[in-house]
Length: 281
Ligand SMILES: C[S@@+](CC[C@H](N)C(=O)[O-])C[C@H]1O[C@@H](n2cnc3c(N)ncnc32)[C@H](O)[C@@H]1O
Image (cartoon, rainbow, N blue to C red):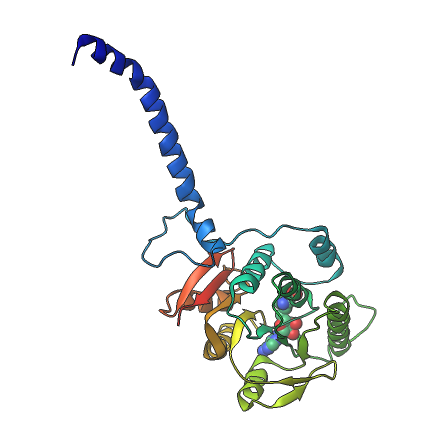
């Protein structure tokens, strides 16, 4: 190489270094975005790819529209915002043509949000909800301290009626099938494959696989575990399950979700912060 050529190539070194730096930065950004892109594509982090400590699997954040804001103001509930992202993801990517299940509806907020994303993604499938509207903190005849003097049994009726009113208004086009029953009884009836009349007096056929289950009933370990065992039995491969209060919010649901994390048939889609899984097989 002539001296002239050597000097010319040396002059190009800074620009080549600049280009290299740019390439490295682009590559770094692409790697950072990878989990989100995978989720968007309906996939999850490949089990073969060990996520680094700061690479928490996630799902895309739902755009907090005026309607969602309004709904969450008006409709009482105890919902973590990250659950809403999981509902959206499940409704977008769950298997076709199968119903959805919610264990524990309280005042209907989560049911209304699930219905919203069912509408958004054109999922013309029923949402089944079961809740006995019982209290874990007191007996029915207990007068609620600080109240004008009503008993828990009356409060229970108020919550149930509020729930029915909320879903009738916010999901008027697609009211969920609501059943006043605990999850164990619900699954017993589900297995018997009969027709049951819901709280709106409409007949619903029981039996078959679900595409998504939201476990938000009794959070104690024994019941949350039973709920998962039943859900596992009826959840289709490719279907999703979300555990409320499973990232430390409650010891019971957290322990069950950790067991599911180690289950070979389930892959973690998101820790948002609650644990959200997809069934592999
Ligand atoms: C945390 S609240 C549900 C909140 C609701 N999913 C929301 O986000 O708006 C829990 C509900 O689970 C119900 N519940 C308690 N034990 C249950 C059981 N074994 N089966 C079904 N629901 C149950 C309670 O009555 C209560 O309404």
